[in-house]
Length: 575
Ligand SMILES: Nc1ncnc2c1ncn2[C@@H]1O[C@H](COP(=O)(O)OP(=O)(O)OP(=O)(O)O)[C@@H](O)[C@H]1O
Ligand SMILES: [Mg+2]
Image (cartoon, rainbow, N blue to C red; front, side, top):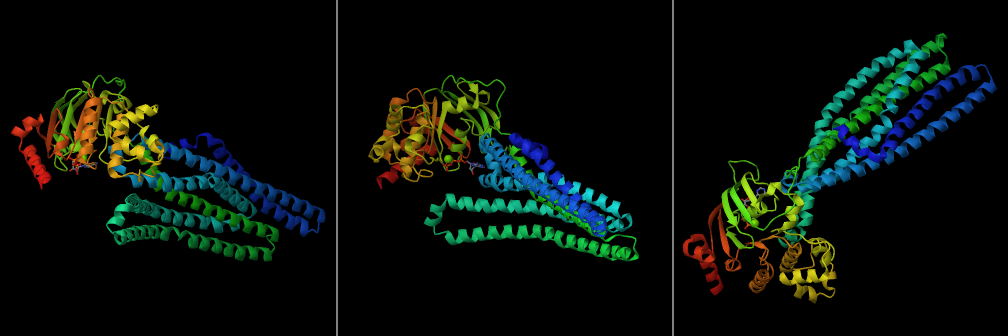
């Protein structure tokens, strides 16, 4: 896991390597300083040798300045390395998420992906920064200072040689218990982010249904869950400080007691005692630093695991080794296709579908809500892979195509569509980057969108605002159709894409399609029977199965569902 993340350091490697080396310099200087001080007191001051004292003093100042410079330099390098690392890590995560299929995204949920790209990366970045600053410095300082102390007075050193293992065991116990609690905390963060994200994207619906109080409560509950989880984790971590202090002051007390007696007896010098205390402090403080590094690492372990989950996720829709890039024609064939969102063969959303659609045909699809209409057509541009059976487009299994080629040939207007912030022209160019204004206008005309675009003061340059808030539902649908048309696809699929336009507009769009897209296979999912009345054939779906497939006239004759829907809608129109 660590190795995988470490590869994100990339071009910032030099900073990451320089930091511990510079920090080592700081540690060496800090170890030297008490030694110089001991010499200054024991030889300079006690012998009243001013020259020697001054020389030692200057040396000490020199060491302090070098230590300061190393500390600052190390800090700067560490910041460069950690921020560069975070940048690369985020970019890598983002790139990975772009390769995800719908199924992968369903698995993680968008909110969780957002937390992973933000909070989790920040946690990892902080841990990394701490790690490169302290991982070498703290142990070096601890060992160096301990060795110095033992050299000065081996007997007195038994004090902290006893204390260190006790402290280490305590710290280990605390950290190992805190680790899973931080994992739980991050899950609560996910829930909180889901709540925020849902609320903000759906703020208009929340307001329309006067659900603010409910949403507030839901948010407060989530925030409280985070608070509790964090408290549970931090409660343990916070123990490190008193345990540490207890050990440190206990140690100093013991050293002063035994060391003071030695000084009185004359077997130990004052200067040595003072530097001995400095070394004891340095050893223990380094140990604390080390424990903090371990703690940060513990906290970020949960985050690192979550990041690696995203990096390790295998995109559901893999590429074959020699993909076909040419789509011959717009024919579609379902051969005994079954599909389940959960890949559970006992819980099939689509069951044993057999269909054959010739290139250029216009096919209507009707069926009750939840009858798997959207599911059926999503398989064609391979937004999901079939669970069983085979789906051929242009006579070739969709899994054999290059993904981009397939999606360029199969243009789909999703049921839940989005436009992005930017002008109308920017949005339409998603269909074809190089489209000229004439082509854009032609597509808009076919989608019956040109009239209203013309009525806007800025025409195609009208800014749509975030998520296309500036246009009505029906206008948005027509822009989405125009965007799909610009791809000049071999197959175009409209998933309930004219549900928000009136019947007259709907009829105009269909007429334009017939005229301009005669060679394109067109699949139209619709609730209104009029939308599919002039299709070549109509698929009637019922509960994930094909109930019937035939021309509208045939279905009128023999299919009960079709006839019922027709009669109901006729009745509705007359009333
Ligand atoms: N991403 C998903 N994960 C799991 N189950 C899903 C998912 N999308 C749809 N389903 C389920 O699959 C079934 C078919 O849904 P589908 O969206 O295909 O219906 P539909 O015929 O398009 O309905 P509508 O007319 O309301 O759009 C439903 O029972 C739905 O709950
Ligand atoms: Mg649907």
